[in-house]
Length: 468
Image (tube, rainbow, N blue to C red; front, side, top):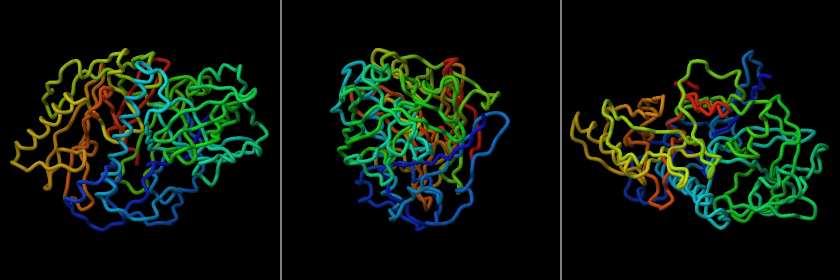
């Protein structure tokens, strides 16, 4: 059945974006903590501006399921900023979130391959898109953070201690709500399950937060498709402030994910196209099911890592800058199920992170190509070490996967200050951490591409597509 539902781009803990004034980069700004996304917002968003697209309901297409996507700072978003911040603050703060996201992804590997349970580990997830879902009967609408590196979904429930939302899910108001018993198979699929009487409960950490939840079931509706008895966490207590206010929808490959629980409905297939941050309407789409997917698209095999079954691993074999394939040690790109090393596509990381040998090779060739035209001073901003204060002509960067090349144009490579006075290479090295062995293809590099996750055929496809 065709569906359309609203998705909002969500930047967790980012409070605002400033409106329209020009800024220059000061030395003081370089010492601030980092952030990435707002760089691309090179325009003013008028607060409270009515947009008729906000009221759009689903439309039926003949070829599948389509979901509407909006940026979190659009007038349609309840999370649009209330207080202005400078461009420098926005950039550095967002980049700090990416650093935490990389720690989270690498800790997943460590937790499964080195330390099976690491409830005390500081893992900060920073999902950047949220989906509007209806839960219960009658339906209650929540905005769930969408994350391709998580499996189980969870929402804050009534009487939750420490939850920040003012609109939690109210189980008592739903006639289809029920708790999952301790003996149910789903109870064995959550982390750290415990038995609260006869009901299944579990504890987990999320960023700096510790979370206690009950495992429950209810009808979850994505646009027009109700999914009865969907299993998810009903949060009872949160310590810390890292949890997305209205919960999370897991799009990973493991048990209890949306793919696993809607296998008959969507056949474990979905795709998305993420809009550019430069466009005013910020609308993209998330397509569920195989019918509506593009026919002309190149694929690369998905790799299986039993120690980290949620992540979408692919085989990155080389990287080309301009026409030159840069010299990267094979072990920097190699997939290793034991250590968790390799390359993943992730919707929650903003800027692509490469392990240090790979990043250094790409950065050095990028700088060399820029210097061919004229000698320019290279500056830095936060974690970005390749920035210029004059306009540059950037080479393309091509990720070369098994069976598929993805060539990125300048819009997917460069970030610009609002005044246009600073331009940076929008990639960074993975954190200097023994567990940081992942190359992460992040959402800025995915923008204006259709990314297709075809799990039954164990393949991932990418095709250029404008999502505005």
